[in-house]
Image 1 (cartoon, helix red, strand yellow):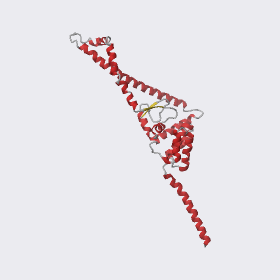
Image 2 (cartoon, rainbow, N blue to C red):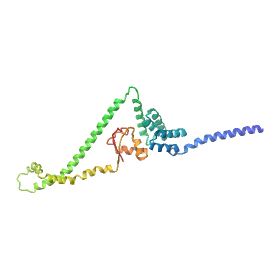
Image 3 (cartoon, helix red, strand yellow):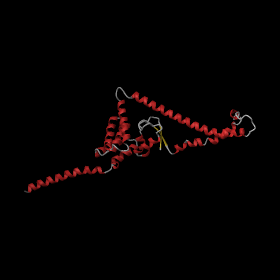
Length: 276
């Protein structure tokens, strides 16, 4: 009997040890992912430009947490896509993120990153099937953007000219109407442009007084906004992380630039964005 009791005791101890080992991993995910030491380390390394070390830190979080590390999957995917140029690995991590966070505010942008990674992979194929098509789309986008800027400049010039001309015309009409004895009323209209000639100095004096409001109006919106020129690898997602340290604010940048962004995935190299 003592030997049997000893055997049962050993079995019980082994069972307790197994249960204790199972409980530790289950309790670990209670810590928020963004509070993991390796995740925080990865964030610091990214800001320092040490992407390879940051990737290693994010992958350690994934190893420790398994499927409960969507943010680390997302950061890893961005590094693979933008820095390591490995679109296949990037797609894997983006899809892992979407599996855990399908309805998050960032999910539309992440789906756009998946499509970008697919296009990058297609360009690596021998036939380069999407290269000419993408070049055409880029050229069309640039032409449309230049046309919009041209129309905007024309409107601003028209407003500026209208604002500068209105006071001078009124000033010229006062002396013509001050002579009511003139029999021909239809003549002042052709005569008024002639009378502008000797009063060019007067127009030159009035224009500076009207000009200040025009340049004062243009810097006003820019004073509250920063500017960013798009470079290779930029996305609304990465710009929100860079300027706000908050990826979910990519919609703010998108809303501030709707005049030149038909959709959230239409960034072009050289495009100047307003950062609200």
